[in-house]
Image (cartoon, rainbow, N blue to C red; front, side, top):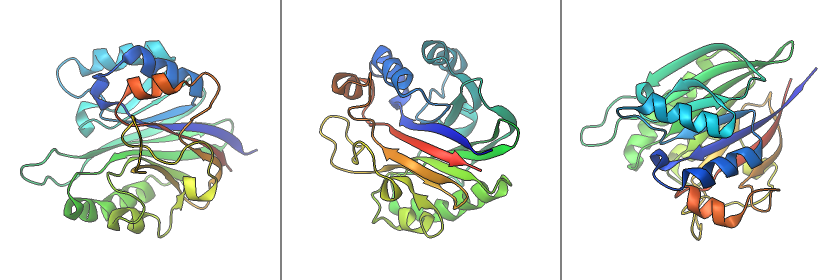
Length: 235
């Protein structure tokens, strides 16, 4: 039987903003899986991640400091089959980038690979890293796979276009809610995305504006990015 999975991608800006508002947004979205960017990564990061988990009903799966701020969290619904933590090649003078990865099983046999990604601020680095990100997603070995994260460029960008050569852009396939994700106060650019392989059916995807329990005040207060919520059907 296929599984319907709710996945949230969220750049939480190192929990520097209103964490109570952040927790309310996440709880209202009721995700099975959260791909986090700019998760806590310095001293005490595990304690801060645990605190976020307690506030949202989520458990730590992979990432954090080992992946330079990308993280995956989930409810108790999926079984974690495997995890991987990958750092991407370092560009001198820039923040190191990494990928939090997991293969999750829902029910008897619906398997979904998830990669949480945060590409860099420079276009040249994003172009170099995009093929490595795609390679890592494929290397997890699950035909149904999702890349979720802050790509730091809009769909016309070179890295975004490379990744969507064979991955489905969730918003383009099944838009629901808002499109633009940055900045949270007056968003004008879509730089956060959920991309999936052809084995995944995107039922709806977008910023959860107007979603029950999600207020515009909380969205603005929680982070400098708006989240992307996707409903996915996994065979």
